[in-house]
Image 1: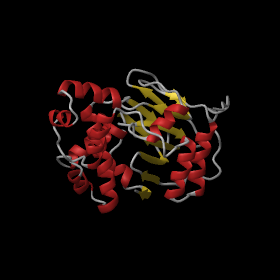
Image 2 (image 1 turned 135 degrees about the vertical axis):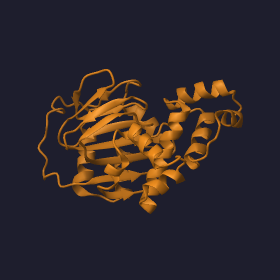
Image 3 (image 1 turned 90 degrees about the horizontal axis):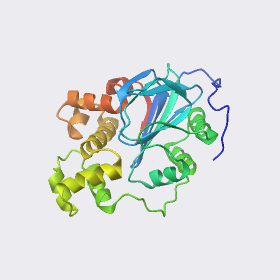
Image 4 (image 1 turned 90 degrees about the vertical axis):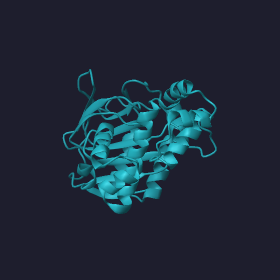
Length: 266
C-alpha cells in the first residue's frame, strides 16, 4: 500500500460540478456517487468506503467531533453524520458475505467500531476516473475488481450457516422469517443464532434484514419508479416505514436521492 502525505489537501476539479447522482447495484456491492450536503445520523448495513473526489468531506460519530477525510472506511453499523458541503463523494458499500469483503479486508486493515482513513491514492484515482470518463457499468465493475484485487476462485470467510441465512434474506428480503425458524434451518438454538449472526455480519439480524430490504426496494425503484410500490414489494409495511429505514441507513430521505439520479443501473 502506498502512502501520500498530501492526500488530505483539497484538489481543484478539472470541471465544474454539473453532476447528478449515480447509483449502481451489484449482488455484493452498491456504489453511489454524487454531490452531497449533510447526511443526518445513520448507519449502513455493510462496510462502506467514502471517497471525496476533489475535496475533503467531514464526518463524526454520535459522540465525536467533525474531522476531515478524503478516503475512509466506515464499518457496518457505525452511526455517524456526514457534511460534504455539496462536493462529490463516492460511497462504495461491500457486503460482508462476499469475496469483495474478503479481498478488501486483506488489503486494508480497518477498525470494526470507528472510522479508518485510507492513505492509498489509488482509491481517489479510481473514482475520479469513473466520474470523469463515465464508463459502462461493466467497466466500472472491472475497475472496482482491480482495485479490490478480487479473485473469483477465493472463498469467503463467513460461517457457512450464517452465509446460508444471509443468502435466504438476500433472495427473499420481504419474507418475515422468524429467528427461531432460521436457527432451526441451520441447526442452531435461537440464542446461539443471534450471537453468531451478529458476530459474523457485524450487525444484528434485524438490522441486516432491514438493510437488505432497503437495497431490495432500491432495485424495485429502478424498475417501476414508485416508492410506495417498491416499499411494499421489499417487505416494508408502507412508504413511511421505508422512508424511516432508508433515512436510518443513509441519513437522507429516499425522494431526495432518486429524484436527482442521472444513472441508476442494476
